[in-house]
Length: 244
Image (cartoon, rainbow, N blue to C red; front, side, top):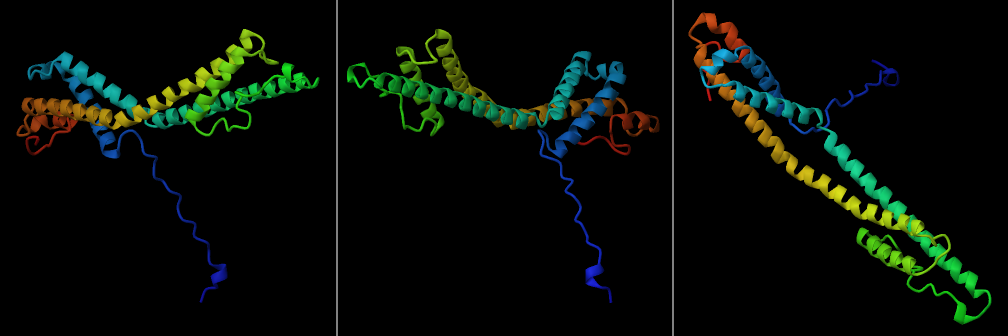
């Protein structure tokens, strides 16, 4: 009887599942077959022209195959774009939030500097600078508070923000953060329409590929032994006509 303590430890195999891409496995196989049929068609273009598979038709098919292959090669790009858009929004929010805190600090600084003489008439009031308010509770909240503080900044002369250039930096940060929403929405929109684009690409790909195969099936019928080699290049059955 073997000693359990000395039994080898069995490590489960690492997962080999690939991340989900733009096309599913069946669609990738369709693309592979389309490329095979395209190569065969281009090699026999003159004969296929007799079946109305013209050079223009083949050019369109070739362009469609190229477009579909490009989409397949960039299958992970959507996730990358979404991540980049999120990171952009996060960085823009942080930069804007920091600038708003700097405005508040400058307002508090000016208030303290003018309060040392104890004369209320010369004090600088910090009302309107949202002191003690949470500036970034949400995107809408951050934008609203930024608009408020930028307006106050433009009206008052604060330490560190006395030149148009300094104020322009803050307004640029606000514009950048406001624009980052468009980046995120574009990415979301792309992700929403991509399944429709994907399915339409494969539909057209399969339809054109099939039409070329049917043309080849008519030109080189299965009943002739001599046609076996060329039927293989078009992925046609060797013992019957092609089905639908």
